[in-house]
Image (tube, rainbow, N blue to C red; front, side, top):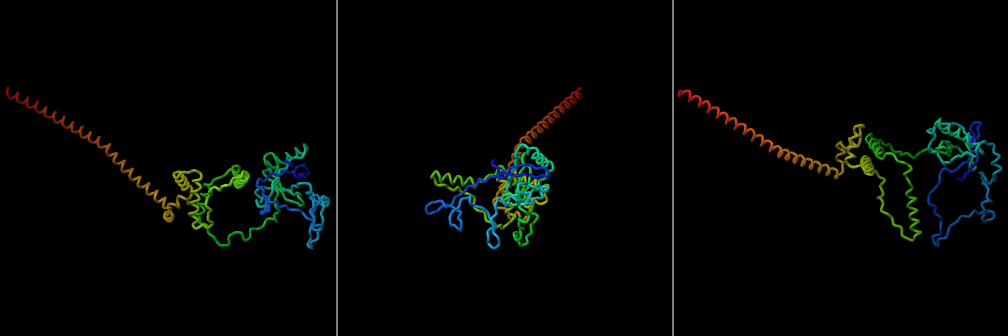
Length: 363
């Protein structure tokens, strides 16, 4: 990796020689300007206004333009003698919590590497001090002709530098927010919370530039001489929101479908949310207004499930009756047999008594 700046980190009386390396790279597809009539390349040339001819990069310097339009040349030697300690050094001013940095101030990122073996020990000292304190360092330095503000933090085993805008370079959001007074209902916030929970988290490493891939495919098709074909995409969504509640519900449903959740899992999730929150999607569906706005497909599906449940109940009842009928018949037969046996026994006993009585009379 090629360094773009050499200097020192000034940490109190400790000086750490470092090299600055770009921490990011741009993978975007670059286009060139051409003349549409003949395909010729359009190039820009740097022309001297006095001589009216092109000049080479080595002949170009810098100058400051004052209010009257006069140009005052500024050389590298002039900049080198500026009475600033930050000319060739990152001067650490303080250590603060990273949460105190406004993300709007964040700019380009760089890696700072130790420059030479003697820089290894103080470099490691600063890195470990930043780790243990769980803070970031705020530093000032000069880069590309101006003094800048930077934030130093630990990334892995290296120290990274984030260029920061000066606080007065960040504009106030005056006139950006809606001027009309808007009231957000608690139920709408609950649905928004549900949608946020359903969308869940994402691994940033899994995200990629789909537009860049599509451009590469387009260029490859052009090079091979084939005609690129556009795949059918989603219909563009309207920016007008007619029913915010309905849009939130549809968003939650779509998010769950994208995650592969079935209708039963969706109902279970809504029931679980209903136990933990006072106002959730489940409760809103139970209200009369929400029931009126329910899609026709859901009402039909609900009615179909109700009819199917009634038919199942009737069939089960008939089956139970049929199974119970043989048991009742068998019980009746058994009771009849017992009654017949008792009657026969009674008759036999009566005959015996009659026989005994007749013999006594004969004697």
